[in-house]
Length: 243
Image (spheres, one colour):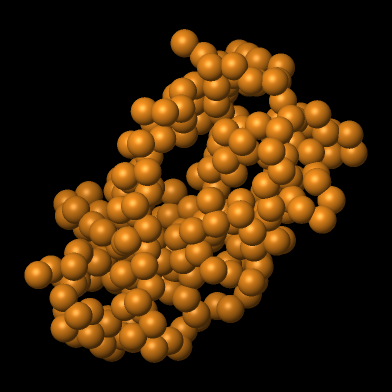
């Protein structure tokens, strides 16, 4: 039984051979791409379950593919990079990557992470269907803000998008749906990243700061997203379901 289809994007041919053989033995269908152009073509033509993405490609930055893939497929994205810089990991996660692995790595760990992200994506899709039936798609709060959960967008009173990243949207959604309830950084990280990283505290703090800036919420005296010292954050804005 096939476990799913994996797109492996890397210009290292030897690594591609090793990954392909191992994952195919594990029951996955593996297709490969060695550059940005080929990767986008494969994503357009093939239903995918997971994407392994190297950050350095001959015709562009792999990081730039993350938002493009999100517009083309619901596949989980695992960044596979030789870079171990914490800031870069955070940026990739903020852009919507589901996991980050540093080269070199064990093939068994790669297989386990692919299995985990595919399972989480499947569970998330089921959860979204249940959540959508229980919670309103549009929620208004603050000074004319409208959170559109169907479009993954935040609009202001002039109907202009706030251009939130996927991570920022998920974080704001989690807070808005738990109005006046303090959520820990760890819990917010689990809701928005669904992974295990020792940098989650800083990642959430960075995104909260960016959200406040986009919302015009003064960090020194916030009225929408308040810091709960020793715990995490809490959404305090008035909200209503929008038609």
